[in-house]
Length: 298
Image (cartoon, rainbow, N blue to C red; front, side, top):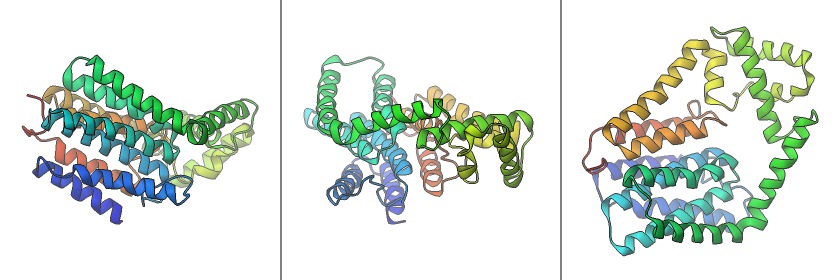
């Protein structure tokens, strides 16, 4: 709760005070490093869910990087931007959230391309080199185990064993698609559970789906489609499309990145039913969707 309040207050200050809030976001990084120092296997930044912490921190870091690029152009701030890119990637690696690890730097690159409309090769190479050093330093303890875990889980699922993080997601997605195809106009949670049981009875290799389907399907679109049917699916797609269209028309980089983060991270998780992520992203949209000369492109 404290972390959530701090995030909300930081975003409000971003909106109303141009130079405020930069250090506050890095306090989150400092707290993450504090958790690492004290041996926490997957840091969660007080959210109780490492995955949600990764999604929120990734988005917040990208917004901070944009604000620094937009408001300050001297060499000192470029160094700060590079430091934030490196530290944010390090923190996300420590959360152990594969979707964020794979996407965070690509989302930052997308943000810079949309803002500058071109690639500045020298700064890009410097940042890549520094991030590479961070990757090498954390490879043995954090990145390599995740690569090996991913490879093992895919192999196990192909052999019919879905009792793993990725395997359970694959099972949930297959069962969710089957439920949607059978009931395209929606379901109750109880009916979905019953239908999943029947599907797994005919296809036992997706057995682990029954353990997690009472929570959600680990995919934003599938979650909406399996419960609210076609109307729910179209509503989420319209929501995504509206954010992206509005950001492109306004040339609104922060809003574009908020939308992209929600879409990318919604491919492997459900952000719109998590209290922390829902409140965070809705406040971000409310703060950055308006025409503001500080936030928008010239």
